Image (cartoon, rainbow, N blue to C red; front, side, top):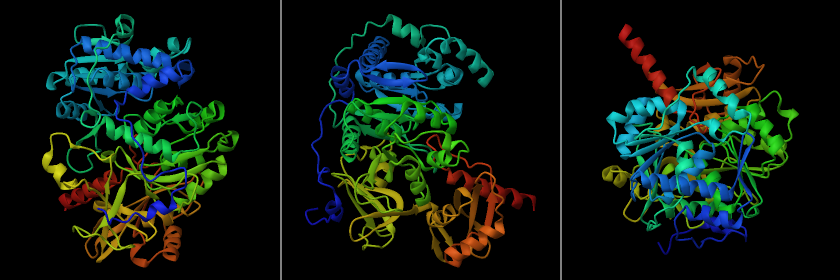
Length: 567
């Protein structure tokens, strides 16, 4: 690799070195250090309740002590099935202190999905919300699960919200769950009242020992557990800190709307905030007006997010009622950032919004545009410090030329150890010399800026032409009456596949299919123009706001199969 070229380093500002010094220590040690440095500083704000770094650290030790008393040993997996709330932060660091491996679990999972993840990971314990307790209890007999620890949103609400919330919860979920303390069911409040906070020391090797099993979305086949070590997560967090070099330790306020059960929110919000001693504003779910109100009142300076979040805020009818000028920097991830959205958001806030790129398997960030420096709209930017990237020719081991489309591969200290109990699948994407094949199609310019054209499996082949959905979506997003757009390939008897666009109109728009078609024909080659348009009120999304393209593809396939069976 001595002759490997890294043209992107020429663009690095002086504040960002090409290589960093990384701490070789357990991830949870950062909470201990921040509690020492910023003990009385506010660490968390949650619906009016505030906790200091000292309180978060003490409670995390309480969790660790209690888990060890239940028999947790080094390397045991613990599922955390919580939205963004104080317990999600406290539990995460508590599990790590106890020597456990965190298994982040989406609170929206159905029983079938939960049972699969608990079984595949071998989790012995789960920490979940009270409204999710019935799901956990139902799947417990079919999984290795031994203990369920139950908490509720009300446990960290200030008076009188904590008294009112159960009535709101009953109305919202049509159920009022009241689990009781037993040998295998444990109440968070009981745990905090009875734990002595004494944690048996655990010898952690940060480079080898896992901190996290983060399950991929499973758009093809079953979800896979991505094995991330303490070191993987630390280096990506330290890279993130260096990329945001103007931000000051102990002085930033971070809007935590990205869920911590997603690796992007975990690294760019939770771990980074704890490492820097920043205050986190926790929001358990995304409601556009609630977010606008919180920004206006709490004045966050950092706002990591996803394009659909920024789009929803920009298109909210009451946007102009709120002051968003506190926002200084945003790195957008999880999906392509339309240029129009970037420009509008920066105009509204006065801050910087840049696009980044990463994957669960890379902890997650590998590339980003510079927040304060050269950036190119439409590009995912350049590789982060100590991160190499290149383009492989399609289904080959040859490196592509500058400007040639192929599969993006990355290499760096943030790349996973592999997939949990799946050595064959690991070998398919991770070479012996450390190159991880991302499955994303893109190209690199001669000066080292990278561009994504699409997921390898999302590419549409119509009439022999390769069509990349992102390229078509960029054109659609530039139309003044389009709020959201996603493009998929659907079967076509003549062309093999053809292009279908799903559109969410902006409020008050009455744009028609014919008008969109005329607009597209003026702005892209004829073979790329959508042949079918479908208008929807909303598009299916993940918890971090990523549009579920594969769900739409599956819907189209089911329609086709249904029509064929009728014939």
